[in-house]
Image (cartoon, rainbow, N blue to C red):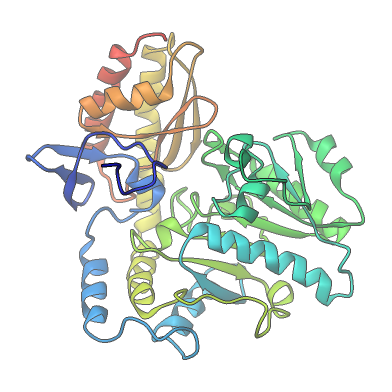
Amino acid sequence: MARPLMDTYSPPDIDFERGEGAYLHARGGARYLDFISGIAVNGLGHCHPAAVKALQDQAGKLWHTSNMFRAPGQIELAEKYCRDSFADRVFFTNSGTEAVECALKTARHYHFAQGRPDRYRVITFTGAFHGRTFGAINAGGNPAYLEGFGPRMEGFDQVAFGDHEALKSAITEETAAIIVEPVQGEGGVRAIPDVCLRGLRELCDEHGLLLIYDEVQCGAGRTGKLWAHEWSGAAPDIMAVAKGVGGGFPMGACLTTEAAGAHMKIGTHGSTFGGNPLAMAVGHAVYDALTAPGFLDHVTDIANTLRQQLSGLVDAHADKVAELRGRGLLIGLKLKDGYVNKTLAAHARAQHLLMGAAGDNVARLAPPLIIDETHVREAVAALDAALGALEPQ
């Protein structure tokens, strides 16, 4: 009998039964140090007590009404997001790709509402990843994700990562917005320099464009700031968030300024499950933990400790590792030619360390934000052994 699931994933032969903090426990009793966090999702670790309690308490009250009615906690969580960011308006979603779709629609509709429906094109960058829906894969532009899905969606202009002149040349009278990840995750854990984000802000202001940040992976405290772009001081007009904001529960959001989002009226967008009572309960618990006094300082401190340890590891394995990348607790190890990131991840699993792979032959680390120095030492020792076992292919 064929497997009932579509063959869209190829997980290793491990069955996890429970998680606690920075660890996952597999059937049979083996324990793994989780340094990928469900791809930057479990920022508070597994089964954080506050998130568990919030979910359990709400589960006995109300699950779903749809957005035909006000969902408990929705306005209050939106107020928290706006209080601590550039935003004035929030639309809740169930995932990052939904948040990106909302961002793209909002950007196009903004110009439509201004009487410029001809301004619909969006500039994107090579190496970008914005999700798996049709609009998102066209924005990302990765040929591997586009193959087999028919003609490309019209309206996206992709420029080379870091090519400032190409970016300027791509702007036309039809350009509506620029979308960028402050730290590219899937594209190889490449952090956009702060000066470049400020330059994008100036460029958008000069040409009347909307600046969209995709902080689905790099937001929610992962870089040591609540939102990654805060390091640059260059605020967007629209921002897509997800992953870490739910701490493992499916939720996301599209945040906008008043000017960028006020035109989104009844009928322009919607979601059956977005902002449901369960998601809002967990979202409040996660957000309160992320913004608790000292939490983000801890993220910055432990990220510096981890990066220092990894720098020594890179030096020790200079024949295999070309570069240490990323920002905060979103970290990449760029491997040299002949060595394969997925093979390194497999060797790490053999050492009971979980990590991921990204584009550009980068091994990706995105541990829970609650890790301590003991976890760092354990991870670095396991990664040292994994690199030692790595052979050229």
